[in-house]
Each structure stands twice: as structure tokens, then as C-alpha cells.
Image (cartoon, rainbow, N blue to C red; front, side):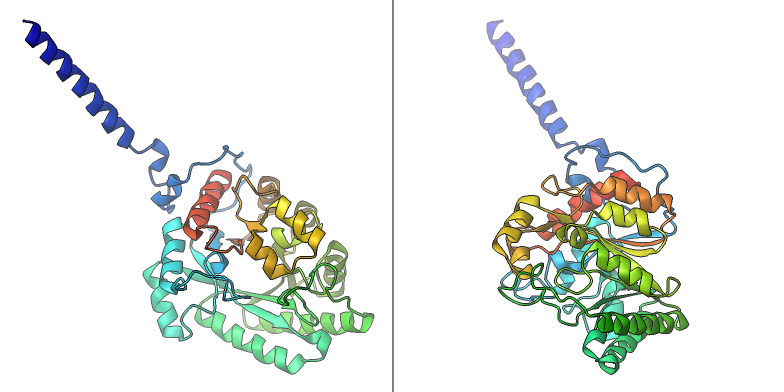
Length: 357
């Protein structure tokens, strides 16, 4: 009888362990796919549940994308793994994370046919190319040549936005140069040349069914709030639009929410980039270069607890203004220190909770 009782106890304990094991393997309810979101999004738990926008974006008019800069840096291709991350992995991890678009990258296939094939395989689109203008250096012909090349490219990609930034005198790619202290300051004559050049490009873009968006950028002549105000005032509001890059603004001591509120109706493209405050403070204190700041980890994604920017009110202002277009996650990071897929999932999970997209 004693042996029977012992066997019964062992059986009961075994059953408890089995049930506990099964429960521990069960996916949480949040793991169920929502709309077009990847199931992988649910594998990164949120740090705290952010408030859902009210109103939120029209899902038929807003797309979520991510730039390749978390995997490989376009300004410095040595910021990569060894051996380098192949473009196939970059595109696949973007799609697995639940994003629908990517900025163009030097790593992607240069042949249109090959690029289209790789994008179609993963249901991805190209959100934008990059054009560095040189109007303040008197290089209009060179600028127009590159601009027309990118317009033709975006027609092939069936895209709309052409991202530009004036790179005359820019220092963001230079080693051992403080981008905040040593950035160019344009003369009145250079500003006039820039206005005329951008208005011309904006008109050409419109004629081709495209939209010109200007990207204020660290280490360039259009960096802070005063620069942005001057640019917006001096250019055609119908043809020259604004790209909101939260990270570059914050880096330059500009409140991205204030820019959003002031220019919500002119913002037609968005880069959602976060900042790690301690690293920003150290970069300013030591005069660290832009690329070295990237290596140090100055940028991160929305949804990262280490980030300093509160994206919810910024996104709310855009939603209230009925923003249409791409919301692009962007964080130039060293993949040796920050796993690209982990951060892509982190950002996508955050945006799903805030925007319901």
C-alpha cells in the first residue's frame, strides 16, 4: 500500500512538471500576428506600454520603413561586421521585423532588375534615395546630374520622395572634426544660391511626379532651428518640403516637437531617430566627430529605454496634421555592439503600440 502511495505521489509530481513545462512554452497572447505585422515583433517585450495616438494615422496613407544604417553605414562602410553583413540579410531582417520599406543603400544591387527582384521577394519598397547638393560651392551642373539620376531611379521604383541636403562645406564625414563647432556657416550669397537651386530642383521634382524633401543634417550649413526657419522662408513652400529627422535635430539642440508643431503641414518625410543622452553629452564635451559618435552609440531607435526622445507627442502632432507618407526608423549603429534585428524589432514593436499600424 505504501509503495502504491509513493508511486501516486511521483505520478502527481511528474504531471505537475509536465504541465508547468507546457505552460512555459506557450506563446503570450501578444505573439499573435496583428494585421501585416510580423509575428517576430512580439518577441521583443515593450519596456512600458506607450499611449496609443488619438487620432492616429490612416493606415492606407502611412507606411513604416527602416533605413539600412543599423546594419551597415552609408557614410562609413567600415562600420559593419567582419565579414560584412550581406544585403540579402539586411532586406530579409527588415521584412521579418514587419517593415515595408528601406532607404537605398550602396550595398543593394545596382542593377534595377536585380534590385526589384530582391525587393519583390520580401514585399519591400525603396522609400528614398539621397542627393547631396552643392549649390553653395557653385556646382549646380554636378548637382543637377545626380538629381536627375535619382529621379529616374525613383520612377523605376515607383516612389515619390527625393531626399536632399546641401553638402557644401559639410564636415560630418571628416575624421577628428567636431561637427557642431566646425560646421559651415553660409554667407547671404550662398543662402541665395541654395534657395534658387532648391526651388529649381523642387520644380523639376514636381514636373516628374516627385516630391523634394530637405534634410537638415549635423555638420552641414542647415542644422539648427534658425537655419531651418531661414530655409523654409526662402524656398517655395509648394515645391520644397521638409524632412523631419528627430535625431539630427536633438543632436543640434533643437526640440523636434517644436519643429513638428511649427512645420507639420510642410513635413512630408520622417526619420525617427533616437539619441542616447550620455553619449551625446560626451561627444559635445570632447568634440567627438560625427562618425566616431556613431561608433560610440549616440543613436538608437524609438522604443529603446536608453533613448532620450519622447516620440509619442511628435507622432501625435503628425497624426493631427493628417501626415501621409513614410515613417522611417533610422539609427546609425555599429552592428558589433547593437544587433540590428533586435533593434529593428524593438522599434517596430513600439510603433505598433503607439500608432496601431
